[in-house]
Image (tube, rainbow, N blue to C red; front, side, top):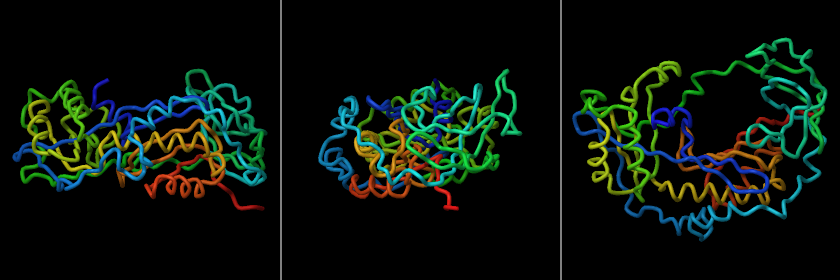
Length: 347
């Protein structure tokens, strides 16, 4: 897959893991960004005087990133159950349904397969008037409110139609860390603006030990449909490194002829992936005790506001508790938790 298309797919997820119940985590590649020559790009940010060492970063708990990556390959045999305090409360659950409605599950693994955990009870297609048919199958997005127990989310209200998604929110991207050149972002070599050229630049960046991240910056006014149609050089390729920015900028200019921004990054991709791997290991072993409902979960490093944080994507019975606990275990490293399950006030 071409780098430009890959960046559009992963958006701001600089590294992502899907961690199953009994096994390890699979991570997608992180990407990085660079800048153009003076006439069509720029180098931004001061190079940190003492880049973070993989072995010394406090969030890694005194181990190198490779240690936590290796730990992720070991199955968990002593999984802690969800405590009794999680049950008996009202929750709102957002999900999408398709095909046979059956008993939708809250805990889903790879390929949306149901894993051990509560299912939704009391839901029928007849109770969803906004259902539509897509490719011969019924489909609908729903917002459900019910009482959570060990076995099920039992509906206490009719299904609701979720609010419309604001496309502007979904198009948020990491910022552009370079100032716009006086003559604007321009192509400096028309012969090096194909997807394969951008892919070559990304591959080069990832092989460097100082590589931090890569992303394609689009102006906020460009819609998702326009991004899909536009060629890669309509955006700005951003690549960050912890050091040797000028050296990498020169090399990247030989590979990529479109708008380029090279900037300083605080953490290397290796360190960031190691922190994510440690966080996943903690969640697999102890997460249920501290607010996690389902062992299958997703993880990402980075957000539109800050590259240096971890985001957990999973149903939770206490989102705030899980975020505080995991951040504490990671020596204060910022943690966000995004859950489709949210508490509702008691009746």
